[in-house]
Image (cartoon, rainbow, N blue to C red; front, side, top):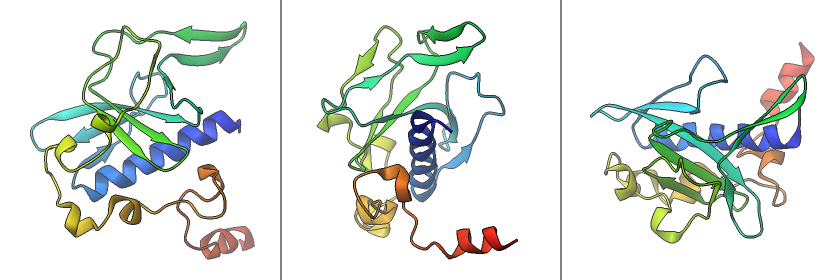
Length: 164
C-alpha cells in the first residue's frame, strides 16, 4: 500500500473515532468512487464528509482527487455540493472541520476557526465527558508519523492475529 493511502486511511479511522465519540452514527460508502469518505447521521439529517490528511509544512490540504488508471493518473476536481463537510487531520494530530464544500478551490489551509470543537459539530457531546480532545482521541505514540501507530495502545491484538 502506498504511503499516501496509509495516511488517508489513518485520517478516515481518526474521523470515525472522533465522530463516534461525539455521538454521531457513522457509515461508509460501499464504493471508493464517491466524492465523500463518510456519512454521518447527526440527528437532524445525514452529512457527507470528505476526509483529508495533511503533513505539509504549510498545512495546505489538496482538495483534488487523484486516481491511477491504465493511462497514468487522473485528476478530478470537486464538483459543487459533492460533500457537506470537510474533515482534516494533520501530522500533529490536530483535527479541523469545515461545514461547507470547497468545490471551486484546489487547496485549503486549516485555520483556528475550523479547529474541531464541541460547537463546530453542534454540541452533540460535551467535551468534559470526553476529556480533552487530544486525550480522548489518543495521540500517536513513537515519533511524529501518525501512520506508524495510529493511536494503538497495544500490539497484542496484532501479535495474536499473526499467530493464526
